Length: 393
Ligand code: PLP
Image (cartoon, rainbow, N blue to C red; front, side, top):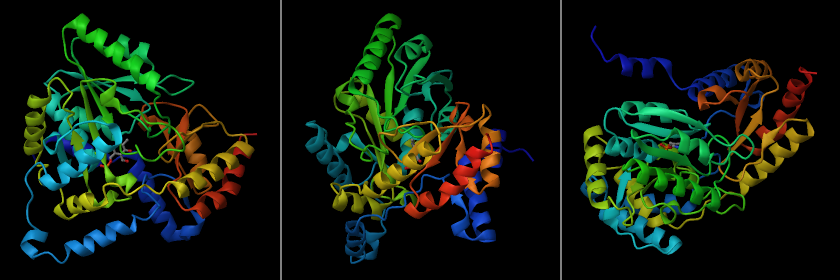
């Protein structure tokens, strides 16, 4: 049978995160949910705000054709204007609804953005460790992925290494702060240094380099300030989703912002719309576009994550594990107790502990522990973490 082999390979191989989560689900059915400590998936454990439910209930009163009808391809103007107005209140900007394209979550935001800017043979720089699906979205846009390791100590962007990786084919750099999988938040200084390096490269090479800011965790921080990237680098495109901030990952709702300060704004807005059309990523879910209008300024409830973070870091540090202190998102990046993260994971798995080994994030020797789980899961997992550490003594 003649089918697309690339698509076949993506479907047949699955993401390692999802494979571990599927194993966790099956294992829970076998031995009881309370006996499996599944830290694999970034599925928020905090319920969506009450205002989301109220908004849905209000929508249900609408005439069915309105309730279930198509919006414009780029989304309803009400949703796009609500997003722009909220950003303007928060960042002192002057965006308009026309700068915003509503999407089915950050996955669609990123796929569309890459398709909007990439021509065959272009390169996109990713900062490793990175969210594994970036591979798929970058490759399918026709670009080559160029990995640059984050600073080994701070996990901030290693600006010199990025500068060294740039060439005339570099079309974009993607950054994700607060970061999955490390939990780092890029400082204003780090971003200013990066912006300066990108500008210098543009001038030297006579090219344009986009900075794609993937920000689904923007509101999930533990005191850190998350700088507004378009204020630092003008050729920025922001990709966002409500999967984490409003705990709505299954509803598939997010957006792309082409800031009006981006020098390529007018053509980019059309390229984003065209890429959405090309991919069939048009008319994001109408019900949740209305939820966005109603809940745009709902605060994220990060208290439960903060409590989990405290319990997990305290517990693991008492057991002698090394990790990167997370400033945002809900992942802890823990050093494996042997160089091979997969071998370490197998030992953890035998104790019913399910973190994600770091290789699929483009970095050897660590595991990602997602703490968007119940507090009890964290507390009850400690004896298993203890056994795991002791097995290396
Ligand atoms: N980018 C990062 C860094 C993520 O962690 C995720 C999801 O976990 C996504 C993008 C995709 O988000 P969404 O579920 O909104 O498509």
